Length: 300
Image 1 (cartoon, helix red, strand yellow):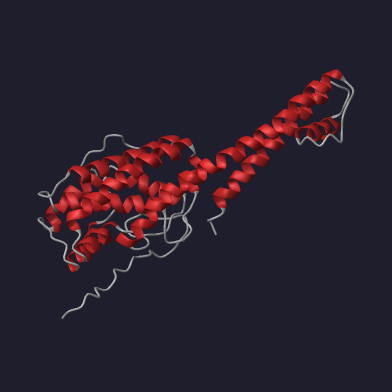
Image 2 (cartoon, helix red, strand yellow; image 1 turned 90 degrees about the vertical axis):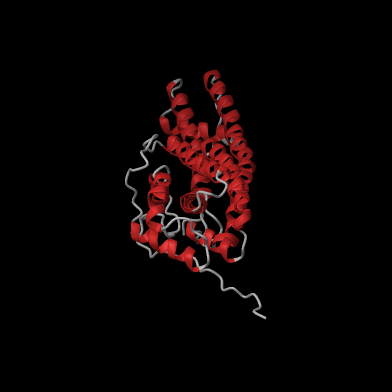
């Protein structure tokens, strides 16, 4: 039901601008002539939409009519001109989100990413995933602050969402860092940094307050019991852990404190799919958990 909200808002914005210009030019025409407000708006609308069914021989009104006639096509042209730019930015964002579905299911979840990589023996290549999402964060940070309406553009399927995908990757990176300190950390830490910087850039454009320098020991809203359920999912599919859950929890929490508050706030604002570890929503819906595929490799 929320899928068409963002596209419809663009149309409403265009209509709002045109209506505002028509009223504004109508008031100008009424102010410099003997026309009443209704007649002024009537003549302004005729000029704004270049229909020309209403005109006046007064020189003062002719100048305003010319301005109105130029304004209408310019506003419509600018709006149409931005549509390909918006669509290209949306398409670039959704390509990576769709690719994540094969790695984390739908909706994505941080522990599920690591569980699936362990299940198929691809943990040595997980750095490529974090590198790709570091670049994705840079693109989204630039496009979604330049065109904030993209924040509300939703994925074609209800169980996919760009914010939930980002949160899942950040949780996977934080888990990887917390449980496997001996593994290469460069791409993992860069992805984490790029992720919460991206969220902060979006928060700045929306006027959402946040702590720019949280302490690693600050509390998080994710409970320890929920954390243990995620760890159990990873362990069930053979993810190697150098630390126990109790030892890894402070390290994971120290990373999550950088992005959890903003991710939860934005997920509530856009009513994202209710995935695990993603906070409450405005609507009361059950949490959707991804299903790990059954290992179908031959046993002979």
